[in-house]
Image (tube, rainbow, N blue to C red; front, top):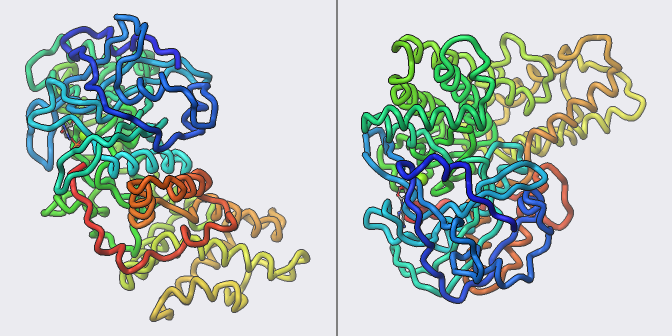
Length: 513
Ligand code: AMP
Ligand code: MG
């Protein structure tokens, strides 16, 4: 790995503190992502490189250039709806930047020891949460959802005290930038408008150069661009059933990436009010609230940018489109899941009525969508290579095709009539000019690419973690391989695509990590 001094470091001392990582005793490899390694141009297999193992655990290695001192950045933020003041990288250190075949990436160690921003914390991350972050970052990427990446996890026997005594680990994270909404809030709330402008200029120049070309205020254009990306991001979360768990403004990426994996969860049974974070007693970050919370967070960013804008109205104008961007982005994603190429009036009702049905019976969200896709694919097969009639007029599909999805409902009547409506909508989707047989096949292809078979359910992570704690990494590697190809019907991984066991409901995930 060829690290260079990061561009972020060039912002100057107001933005960060340079300090070495705290050494991690006796580190060993826990996980390595071939896909993230490819980003950096590194080999896919776990490296047999002691110096790299030490370095990515935060330990000193010989002949390190002095200018490559790691740094912790300072930010502030709103936590659970309240201004929390100064926060910052309390346990993350930016090692530098790596220029790879897919551009420059910041390389950050999470869990590398105390920093001036640790506020009473120990600067460490435990193996359990590090494995969760590692697996989920890469799983999200494989699902096509913007996210920070995770190159590897290293573990150590060093004890770390949480509710119980656990062991320490370090995740190596990658992103073009780890700048958060909270970085802007920090300088704005502190009245440090020069640094605020410097930060905004940096983000625009590096990541949003189009904001300068636009007429008008470039900072308003930045707010509008971040609004668009954030709306797209949360639409993808909702569509796949992902709950972030701690949507504080300091966990919001200025690049629209999923950032800071803590008590996240993929829904098992569909429950819009689901709260995945045990510490979130008011349910502020419930699944169904995420879109509004992201909007709220964007308002915080808008407020932080006010000193750079002509007037308040400019911020409001940049934020306002969220109200249509988000629902449109979500409906586009849901239409992908439904196999619909076009976006039409009434599709929202079709979707909402289905979600009501799923919610009423707490139907397993991932399995429902996958079975629906397979039912569609099976009816394509059943209809035969020489397709007799399409579109279905009565929409009563062949029994064997839709049975597995219908079986998910204790009271299938509602589903039966919804299926009919959906089939009727599908039948008119792409117009009569299409060849009916290939059209149907395209529908199921679209659905099978939009509805994953395997997601990182809590219990799957838990099983991999339990084994990893006992020194066996095979479950972790097997899960990682399945999550890397979430849309494929992979033989031998049926258990990873199955219903959660009863004990999954008893897993309690808190902010403690
Ligand atoms: P989070 O809720 O994980 O987004 O973290 C909120 C803030 O607490 C951030 O500034 C983190 O860097 C900091 N933090 C979380 N855990 C620790 C820890 N174990 N040691 C030091 N700082 C921490
Ligand atoms: Mg955080």
